[in-house]
Image (cartoon, rainbow, N blue to C red; front, side):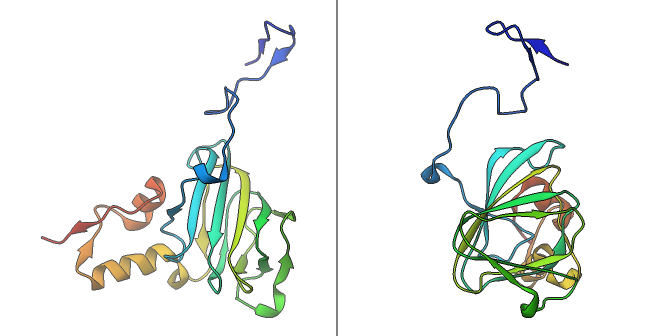
Length: 182
């Protein structure tokens, strides 16, 4: 559906959710939160859009120095922009430090959907911005590397549980909802 602009008379596309008015997101306004599929120290922030929907989105991922994200893939095509730090990414189903390539701030990396890859914050913390068309998905090549599965095992060892399916619920909500075992 297109509509005509009252200012120019030209056809205008409908706006995506949250994109109908001008706004700016400043670094201090970014809300960093844990993402259950990642190691506990990694943070994710939704910058624009709703990653669970079939629509464009932009997220940022902050990974502390030394942390590895083991081989995984995403169903959606992704464009990574390095915001800060050095972003190390390698392709393949097995983590192989020899396959890592280093990208500095300002670099743009195009990753086709369903491409197995891995990351390492080898030289310190990095922040990337990911733009894609959702819904966001992530599948670890080895289920034992899945942060949600590790999280679930950690909760169980602590005598905690999550209502419903940990994998589906945490990913859908983008956060963890813990309840104490009765």
